[in-house]
Each structure stands twice: as C-alpha cells, then as structure tokens.
Image (cartoon, rainbow, N blue to C red):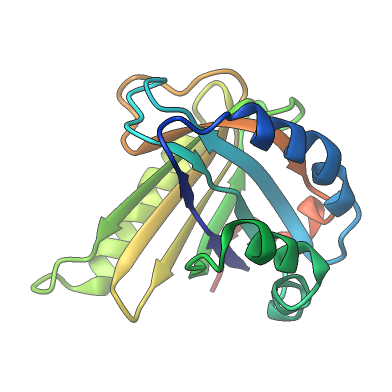
Length: 195
C-alpha cells in the first residue's frame, strides 16, 4: 500500500464553490480506477474547523505503485498541473490500514496528522506505538477507515482517518471536509500491518 497527498493552498478570497463544482463533475471519473484503494477529495476552508487557509487536498491509498504512476502521468493529474501548477506530491510507504465501525457509511470528514520520528528515538519503537494507536482508533465510533504511513527519507509518520460525520475534538491534525470518496479497490487494500 502507498499513501499519497498533494495540498493546493488557494488565495484567501478564492471561491471554494469552484473546487466543489470540480469535485462534483470530475470526482466520479476515478470511481473505477483500477489499483486505487481510495481517494478522499478533501478541502479546508478558511475559518472552518480552525483552518487558516483555503485548500484542496485529496488523499489517496494505492494498492500498487503502478496504479499511482498511471495516475500521476495520466490525464487526471495533468489537469491539476494545468489548472493549479505542479504541486508537491507527498507520499508514504504504507504501514497499516484498518476499516472502522462506520466502514459502510459515506465519510464526510477526514483528519491528517503528520508526526516526525525524533532523531534520538528508535524508529521501530515509534512505529510500534503508532500502530497501537491506529488499532485503537480503528475501533472508535464514527471511523470509516484509518491508515498509517511513513516517509523514511524525512522520517515522518502520517496518520489519515476518514470519519462518518465528525472527528472527536481531541483528534490531532488538520481537518478536511470530504466532498467525494472514490474507492474502487477498497477491498484490495490489505488490512492490518503491512509486513
């Protein structure tokens, strides 16, 4: 499993209806994209849920690198580059994926929490602690699905969780409204630890 996200920060006076319309028309185009476990079309709006910015920030879980490559070099991502410029594409090696009690619902909220692995820490211990938190989070009411990834180049963990309606106030990280979920190969994402 591979996790991926690009975050496009938009001007403060940007009309977010443009993004909403874009997702409404283009979102379903990936509803049958082979190798895409899921794509959560996330947005942040300035002043909503503490967001200081307007942002379009879809998050992906891929079942295989070939599918991610097909997307990045295909027409869908080229449309993003054409309309917004070429964003930085963050990606993480998948460590774990779990479905939650609300897996049968349509998620409306997502949280993203990035955490550095401290230089002095044993990376294996940090990952084990993060895996335990993921397992606990997966049992939380309202969780649709949750994933954990790592970028070993920068030693960063990423926790991404989809929620049915809202995330608990205690949940750390950025909060996104989920406008659409494409999940053609959700069942192809391996559950649990990825090794």
